[in-house]
Amino acid sequence: MSPSVEQVARTDTGLASILRVSVARLSRRLRSERHPENELLPVGQLSVLGALFRNGECSVGELAALERVQPPSMTRTVNCLEEGGYVVRRPHETDRRQVVIALSQRGEETLAADRRRRDAWLAQRLRELTPEERQVLRQAAPLIERLAHA
Image (cartoon, rainbow, N blue to C red; front, side, top):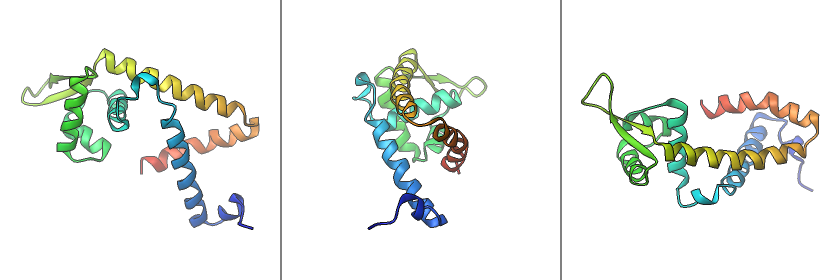
């Protein structure tokens, strides 16, 4: 008989393994809940829309750093998003040599619809947990967020 999750998670290494697998599975499950209209938009492009929502207007270089990709890759992604009407390019307010990328109305609406659908799915799953289990997740959420940004 294999050890339980609780037994494996007793060590830091075991906890790391359990969290890695669990977070990856949850991430895949949430990706499968994408809004039907957004299924043609690759996850990487949707991630860039989210970065623009969280950080506001950014240069291609800033977006590349936020998304941990090379600037030429981000340029291609931004070009696709611009062609689809999800983002717009604007001159930088103080340095006219630079261009910043901003969410368009379509980009904002697309991101909002996608988030509503995924949040609804996750909220339903959370309602299936006990109040105590939800409290544990409330306490863990900030820690998981910190790990994600380390």
